[in-house]
Length: 264
Image 1 (cartoon, rainbow, N blue to C red):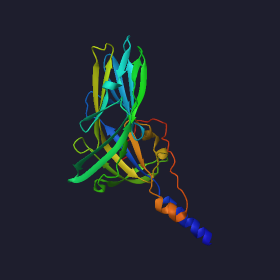
Image 2: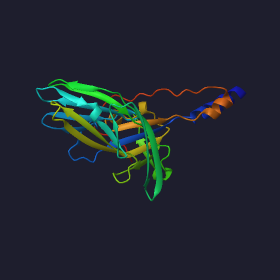
Image 3: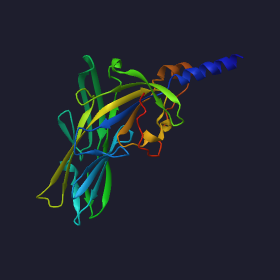
Image 4: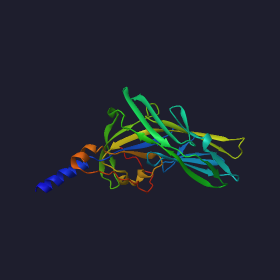
């Protein structure tokens, strides 16, 4: 009986030490950018189209460019950048850290920070060809957001079970994260084309009860949706129990659907 009781207590302790997941939805302020059915952000001209996708852990920024012309195009990553807090971080750089603060919702103070890794390269796009590149990802830390901005809510998981969570919404005036992407593309080096698109977090959900693999299929693969995992701090329990608790990698679902409004 003692073994059963100890096992039950241990299970309860371990279950209480789960990761917290922050699920974010991005929006844009640009009228010339279309958010398509799968959540990607699309900008189209006579010569090309550019799509941004952020799905996955820590907002990996996937940039897809389709060359509609009969001549080769080039993306100059050295003259392309992420613009955050009025600072440009070149897509051809190495590693950067960033932080910011502000006031939202009845003067509640908030703070965020993170880091990003970016490769160095120039991309060649043949005529009538599409390329896709992921130059960086944002590793956001939402732990310092003021807890007063969150309200109780629910989301349906992949089995349509209601999962309780904390949620909040933002607009462009109070969002904790606003950034721009600036691309330089050319056919002729003397006549570069530049494209700037803006993005901001418009919704944020916080829960320890819903893992990314259990998200409803209608949002797990959307291009405007990403998540950040904060692993549990299990140091105390590791010492107490004499064990090591490993937090595994979580995969997103793979089916795309256009109905993604699960807020209640």
